[in-house]
Length: 193
Image 1 (cartoon, rainbow, N blue to C red):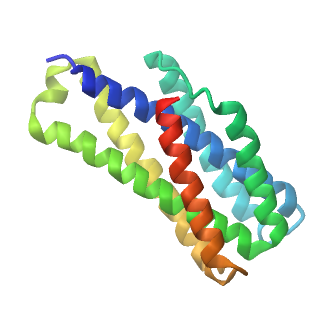
Image 2 (image 1 turned 45 degrees about the vertical axis):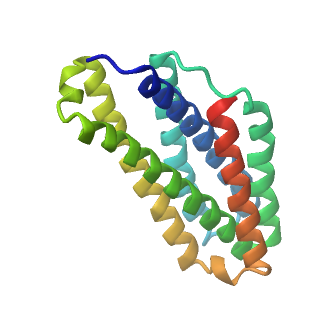
């Protein structure tokens, strides 16, 4: 069977918001790297996480193009906000930068888990759906695999941040809640605009 209108809407929103989120993560790490590029201990750590985000962004850019889904109209704002968040928290210190990473990756891990529940729920409701969709079904299977892989990368970043004293940052609770709240708002807006 073909995708229903609601399934197609969900997939368009998922691709749009995931691309926007990976753009934001890319810019956050870019801002952090600008501060820590001469820090021999943090530079390779930030670079590793940033390289993964670049791969995630490239993947969702290609998916948007292939499926003719428009990117969020908020991109110019997210460009500034993402870089400013990364740069600003890095200027507050290593622990604040790690608190930023922990907060963002907590929210993104939750977001990806929610998307996987919906996609797998669609599959559970109609077990033959992916096979019955032909090439579209293959695309959906690959999307599930991609989201799982990227979610696992994001959760690895979260663990790395905790291991590097994210929770010892000055004003951690406030910083954590503000950044998570900002991520939730960005997700909501990017799905729709």
